[in-house]
Image (cartoon, rainbow, N blue to C red; front, top):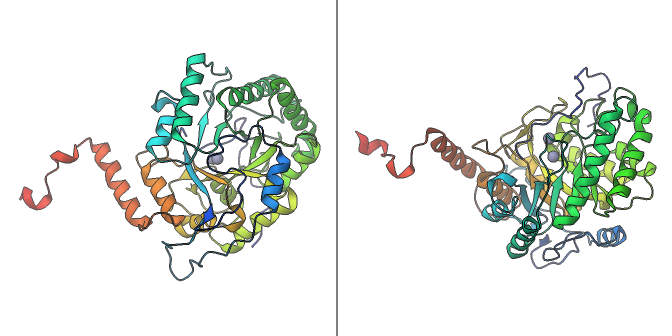
Length: 398
Ligand SMILES: [Zn+2]
Ligand SMILES: [Zn+2]
């Protein structure tokens, strides 16, 4: 098992990192400290130190029953993560909160602004009040914002105009988090323009520092790993060590692990050794306490293909067992896990994916394959626009 070296992949670079996104614990009877305890709505004011302490003092959790032999584990005594999804702001009046409630999320992610526009979204006082009230009422755990896709912090010399806009967008993204009371801003660092990380590290450092300073915000910034290629920053988790070292005074800098990206980059999450390699690498590079969120996605592309193509849970190349292993991983206890899957009906994370996630996390006693089958049937009916009530059973039709 080794992480593939991707320096000669020939995969075309893009100004905008490739996206296939769709717009879009504790053990029973135990009480392991979590960086994001449920009921504590925000960590904006928390010092990273307390996260470190919380993480470091996590007791060892008994490893879950191995899923080896039984392909689809259904019952585990560990409930390690908060489960949630990216919720589209356009579906409801409360910028994603209504959708999160509908899906039964414990944690969520939204876009604070339109993902493909530089101009930040403006919120009226009543928008903000409505969002905060809806969230309060929903009793949701951490909610993250995903930064827009246009940001490129390595662009200082190559594309100065984009660089300035990136900093300004990141700064307003942080301010929106403050406004709405969100718990972190997830961002992709962007391209190194063929210069390698060393060639753009000053650009990245200055960009992160200026955005932080301009925003006046101390909301955690979560750097997300990418699927590759060699021109994108943050495929290997060791890249983040370089960035963290450069920005040594930003203690609210964290990491968001995207499982689909990691798998496509070269961490084989179908194998226990692959997950172990990824987590050990993160631990030695930056420390696992810096992992503040997880994007839980299956991958449409094979291991090491360097393409960012999300798939519904269990329907891609990581598969049920690989996803389940991540969900039950003791080292990820308490981390919010957020779906960014395309959805069985193509409209973003849905009940089918959430239920599969719950099943694979040992929190819903139903076979994930059965859930997936039902979700596919629901999607097919929706597509055919045939109301369920009007469908005549095959036998009766004859
Ligand atoms: Zn992601
Ligand atoms: Zn992605």
